[in-house]
Image 1 (cartoon, rainbow, N blue to C red):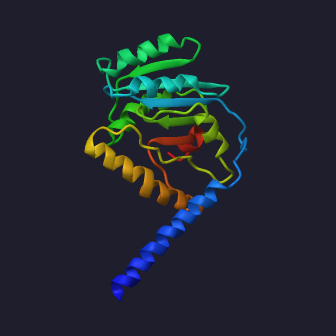
Image 2: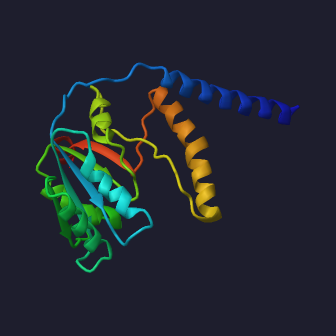
Length: 211
């Protein structure tokens, strides 16, 4: 009897999270949002070269957004990603972009240490941090801005896994695109906040003011 009840509870929970996700899909789009279309600094850390970095990093340059700058952050001038970023910047001279190299041990997190210089160099009040292996759709920045509400502290989103390589990659995509995404969207529908490092969109003065 115990196992039957446990199975029913788990099934009910599963169906409830599916229902919350389906309800969220039918929610009207946010639209323009309350902050309009402010200029944005797009921060992208790079370290080494992954299989799809040419595609994912180049997506930074083709955002359908009126005003944004791109800051790439590499841990050293000898990093393998540096020549790739330089080629991409040369191929898109119309887009304001720069590459910063070097890092200072400000935190215990190497990624944040790499991004620290970019955060300091950002010229806009609105900053989006996104990983190098994330392929950005053309409306990526516009969607983040539109999601900012009166009580928002950070905008984040679970990524979709694609083009896995090997059994480990397939397992990661299977989990990322099913249970994890469903639970995170369900939590968001209930007003429970979450943040995931793949996408973090902040108001810089707000974060700096909080220390």
